Length: 471
Image (cartoon, rainbow, N blue to C red; front, side):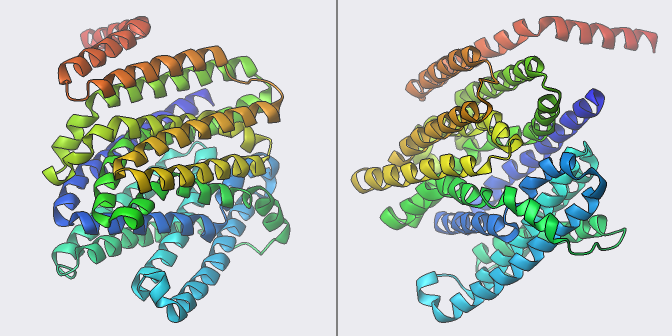
């Protein structure tokens, strides 16, 4: 099992590095094809899409981790019933969305095309989440990699095709048609794999089991969307869509390490459940420390180079937001640390506490954004992002203690690590215009990494050298 976990972890990480690298380097292309207003509009589309993704499947994929242990004999039937839930709810959402567009078109500010693309996207994303959650628990990265590549590669390729041909008069439409088309192709692949052995009968007991776990995740997921996107939405409506586009670009860049760690969380989740089932808290604490230190190190390194990344990838229209890039990155740091304590809430099936914590932080974020954006520039939203995600992490860490009645993680390591990380990121922020100072911090951190892992590095170099000589 350890071997499977390591192989899966390596596969997920390499897959995400390649895919996010492709997505990352496609950003300058779309930045130049879409105006700041169109880029801002596309980001608003993505935010609405995120809410529909959660509503379409009622977050049923979140129950698969528990079902893997609770429903071993009927696991495949349970997965198919999760798909049925996604289908039924998506149809209802589609009907409601189209009726709303018919009677309240002026208030909604969305066309029929956008409404239906959003509905289809919500269904496809939920379906893919069900499939990938199943693969993650089974340590089967191959299918995960294939569906991920299909979604990303087809989405980018078709977007470029539509923008340069059919929708050369409306690049925003070309972008959303391309992205959703990629999801449709991936969904066809998923359905073929999930139902290759035939359909399964509807099982209301499976529906009750899954929804009991997943329904509290719906307000949690929506609150996550609000928490991560209310700044951009409020910038658009309180200030203007151009500022929303500029801010969205910098925010997207700052999400890069969080997206990378999403791949590692695919290994952390099943591994956490394994250790909890074995009551091996000592091993769990050690693994959590390693995960935490890796997250902190990557964010420090990213803070040292993010201003240069913005300059390389964007045009001068977006340079105005460089001075808040590290502050936004600090918020994303705490959003990523959330991966550590949240599994406690999932393991004990106390998903209502996840929702409560996240909803409180979402409300805090809206209040802070409204006050700051009505008094200061759009850049002030970065401060509310940082403060809200700090509260987000602290709430969930406290909740994990309350549920398990103990600290399952090494709080001394976490507290000291956060202080050091924020100090170094703060130094990079103070010297954001001085690449020399930030370069020194970068080199020191790399040196520390080498020193901490020197025995492992030397032993592997020695093995490779011996293999080369023997060959």
